[in-house]
Structure formats: structure tokens, C-alpha cells
Length: 99
Image (cartoon, rainbow, N blue to C red; front, side, top):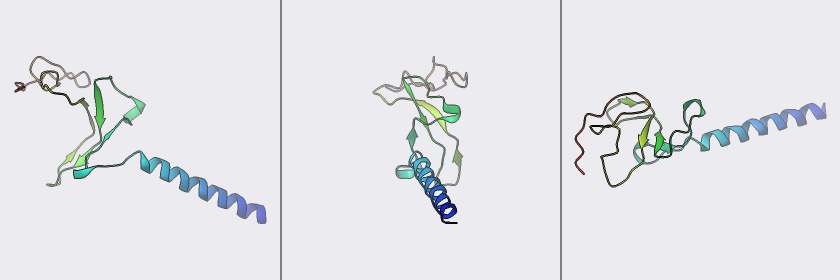
């Protein structure tokens, strides 16, 4: 009887620990947006990009998680810029870079 209680306590502790570990991987920042290396299917992307988790805008619109190019001082290498193609969607860029 005593060993059954101990086993039950161990299982509960392991479940609690697992919950904490998984919860830490989904943190958020101001505005509900967060950047993460945890991506769908375990894919970690290219070195010049990162995955942005989905979030809900203040107006209630949901934005799905997606890949973005890493921030830098130019817009010319963004996938949305004219002349570039998003490698994940195949969509061609349509925006004229301003800098």
C-alpha cells in the first residue's frame, strides 16, 4: 500500500515537472508576440530566419505562427521585398524596400 502511494506521488511530480518544462518554451513578450526556435514539426529553419509564434491582435484578429527574416538595417533582404521569394510559401515579394 505504501509503495503504491509513493509511485503515485512520483508520477504526479513527474507530470508537474513536465508541465513546467513545456510551459517555459512558450513564453511571450509585450503585445503577446514572441519569437521562438521551437517550430512546427521540429524544423529549425535557415540561419537567417526565425520563427514567430502565432498571436492575437488587439482587434481580435489571429495571426498564425510564421517564419521571418532576422532583423537588420535593410529591407532589401526581406521576403516581402520585390525581387525576393519566400522559401516557405513560394510567394514573391511585392513591397518596394524603403531602406
